[in-house]
Amino acid sequence: MICYYMLPLSEMVRLTLFIGAILPLPLVHLPYAVDFDYDRRFVGTVSSFSLVISFLLIWLVAMLIV
Image (cartoon, rainbow, N blue to C red; front, side, top):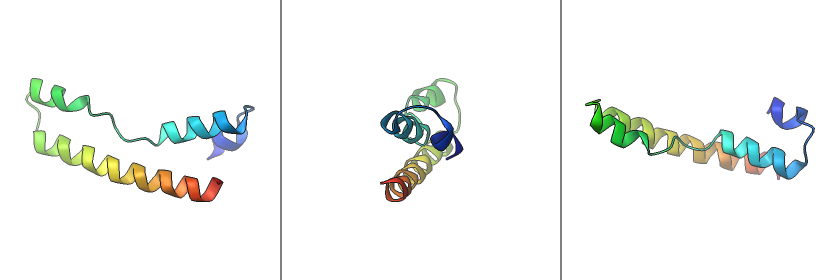
């Protein structure tokens, strides 16, 4: 939130950067989990939690800023 209010950019650019910072983890880490024999269930669980948390944060930001 501090960066959103402190950056000397237009509001659209600041909002785009802020929402980009709270997007979910990319799904590219799933193939690496298989390649390096990591715990696939844990990686899938973290990915699912990051999706839910990110959607809630984006909704909250949209309600507060807009």
